[in-house]
Image: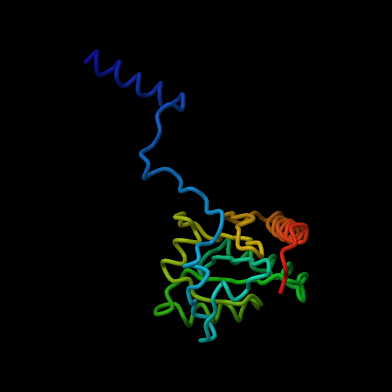
Length: 188
């Protein structure tokens, strides 16, 4: 009994000191620095029955927002992001909204939601592999990625913060545009 108590106390002390790490499978995945070619070239189904690839927007800053119609924070974030999208109309910035919902069961609900919130982004369905890759193994939505014209990920964040998300998006887009200008990246 005394040995078990000392062992438990030692393990607790190590855990509190930060010396014990979780198994590799439980650790947070390494953040992507760029989108893989396989993802850039994957055909994504558009909500309007067409299709597109993220590679179609090479030379632009691309904002990818992962959302779902049932997600409360997503519902609050979309009007803020829509205001930012309108500010960048006519500039080398593409806004893409990908729903993580299953088109076989959620198509009507998603389309009704898009009409109700007046979502002006290019919209598509994130198939499970696309969602998993973009979300980097973290199943939380909303998530936003800002991708530079050369394909590297400028910023990736999860969640929505009232009063801050719009400014964060705007600042990140400006940073990506400035970075692209100073490095001589060409906008299309």
